[in-house]
Image 1 (cartoon, rainbow over the protein chains, first blue to last red):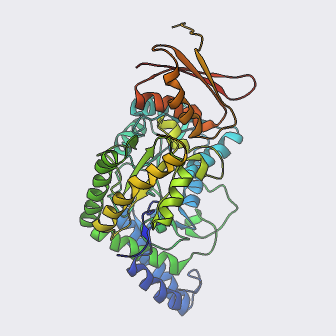
Image 2: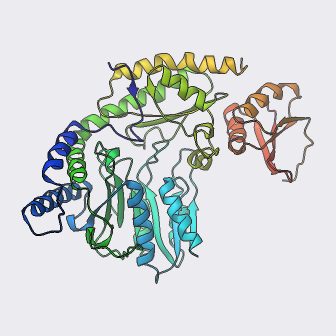
Image 3: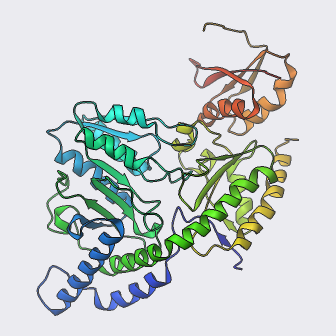
Length: 380
Length: 81
């Protein structure tokens, strides 16, 4: 057992060994400009297109629908604003859930400042979007785009993407699906028009995102013209990174059925045990309909930053949505929208290979850390 | 519903960061009689979400949250038990 248990896969999954191998090989052979017409360029081009085919297959897309970006955030920014731009004539209304990743909400903010309108549909106590209200929102005339994540990045709750997609289809509205938390772990739900994902969350390297645009979806980049990536993403492709990302996705998806089920059981163990071991704890998010690797709980009367620091000292890398752990001094918009406790918040997200022993060690040290922090704060 | 109950106790948690306002509330709610209302004055945005969430977890009643002209909120909680 390693000294530090890394439980923050939702921030970044450690590089998959097969991605590392592919990255090192591709650095040597995939450095040339894939758009040129000589031997080295053709080699880079071949690697890039092979990776595109593999990624497309794993995500349920056609290769020509897939573009590579420099991050998941960039994929979302380009996807949201490019689709809104392409559908300008249809209208300027954007619908999202209230618990989307900040990249969606910030892109929505740009759209709003540009004169567009935005509706963020609320969620229930588990963080699941109100499907009726979502369907009603997309039925509003002038709706250009709707956005929904596959699963929430902070609490793991799965969103009803297939149902939302059906509602969107009925009103001729494209749906952007942010699959950052589940790509490589769960099949991508059907019905998306635009898909965004991030390689470093499935064990690929940082610096690679995926933007897939379904054939027939109106899309127009809002950025200065560039020939790369079917005019959707400007700039020279990171071919070695993309090759490694494809290798990681292939490896992750191949073992997903077994490994993610195993991680899901460990998450289930945490969900079940934490409230029994620690008094005054709320485990949040949906217990069943969720991403396999994420569990979040909040401890009453506990300063989230103090708990993260203590867990770090005890050898656990976790994250938190509490305001004291954020640069903004505001609690996470996800926890706020759910109406759950925002302080004392801990998100545990398990990378592949997490052992049951590591989880048990976490469950063994947590109660005393919480008790001591409460004691120091004067809570009996 | 227009039941406006005067708070039996006002807790000044202005300038205090969560979880301190909640800790103060948990401690002092026992100072008021059953069904009386405690007002928590707080300006940490986390308290706006956390006081109602605490009420749900602890089976007390969140009566309402009222914005204060001076900033922050007066968050009213009814003692249920």
